[in-house]
Each structure stands twice: as structure tokens, then as C-alpha cells.
Image 1 (tube, rainbow, N blue to C red):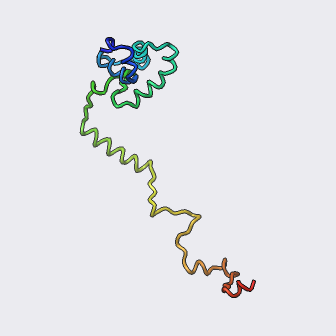
Image 2 (spheres, one colour):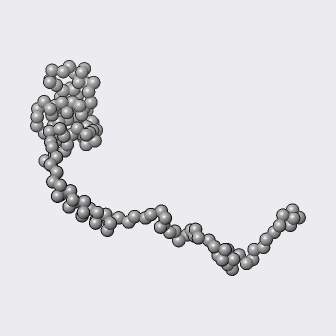
Length: 146
């Protein structure tokens, strides 16, 4: 009964709430532009406001859990649609998606990660290599003398 609501009461509602009520009342799906035109008509918004706010309205519809975008491009309430699930399709999809995931995705486990620039396995033999033969050990007394 949107038509019987005052403009002040309508202004307290979000655009998506008004759209939801409109779709319930008229029981037919609508495209984004027509649905928002009806919302604007109820709120007495100008054409400029329509142009300015239709993008936000579309985003609100897409993020709302109450609406569904149908294959023909019209919006309807999710509550008007049921989901038919064929259990065989679920198993077929999961089998094929698992294979695809294994072939397309690369999983790197932290324990198996190797970086060519960082060697975590340093042994005493590595420290005794030729790179360090010019180094000498200096004790504290020699440091104090310099």
C-alpha cells in the first residue's frame, strides 16, 4: 500500500525497501530503470536526482539479500523464487571443479617454500668456506687497545 503512504513516511525508508514493497505489491519483476522510476515517482524526485542516484540504487539491489537479478535482466524478490537442486549436478560440479582447481591453481605450503636468496640451512661447513678465510677473531683486550 505504498500509494497510501505519505511522502514523509516514504522518505524514512531506503530506496531498496521501497522497491521491495513495490515488487510485493505489483507482483511482477522489473528492470532497474523502471523500478527506480517508480521509487522516484513515489518520493517525488526530479529527473536529475534519478540520474544522479540510479547507480547507487543498482548497487544496493546487487548487494541486497532480498533481490535477485533474473536472466532477462529484471529484478524480483528472492522470496518469490525457489532453488531446485539436482543432487547429481552437485557431485558432477564438485568433481570437475576439484580437477580444475588442481590443474589451474598452485598451492605453496609454507614448509615447502624455497627462496633462492635465503638459505635457512647453514652448517658449520658453510661458515668455514673460503669466503671467511680473511677474517680473524679479535678478543676484548685487542678492541680496547685500538
